[in-house]
Image (cartoon, rainbow, N blue to C red; front, side):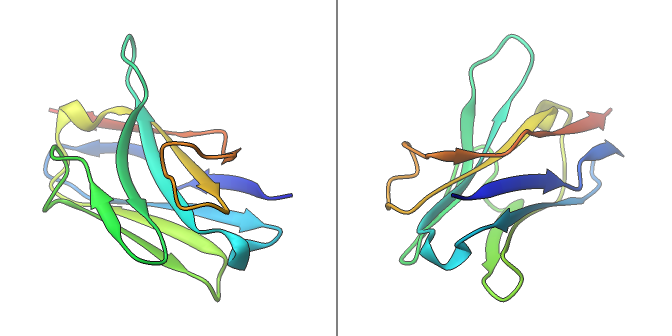
Amino acid sequence: QVQLVESGGGLVQAGGSLRLSCAASGSFFSLNAMAWYRQAPGKQRELVAAITRRTTVYADSVKGRFTISRDNAKNTMYLQMNSLKPEDTAVYFCGADTGANWNSLKYWGQGTQVTVSS
């Protein structure tokens, strides 16, 4: 069993930066696909970025601004968010799975709020 806990959200002005963390308890090494999703009010949850043992992918809206990474020694995944825009405002969730499909994740965190003011 794996538990995920996000942190690092908050309020930031447009153009600023935040780094989200997703700390995992349990068998972190067994996790293959890990991802960040976000959900804004009134909108569906959408993929922000994903990382597997072989690749990383990003939503077009965040390419060049966000960077996903993982530190196996710290059992933690990160999302570095730069040049933030008001449209990045959402609850950000981390998810993970032992498989490689980031569209079908078994484990989820509780979410962390990111608010970008204009």
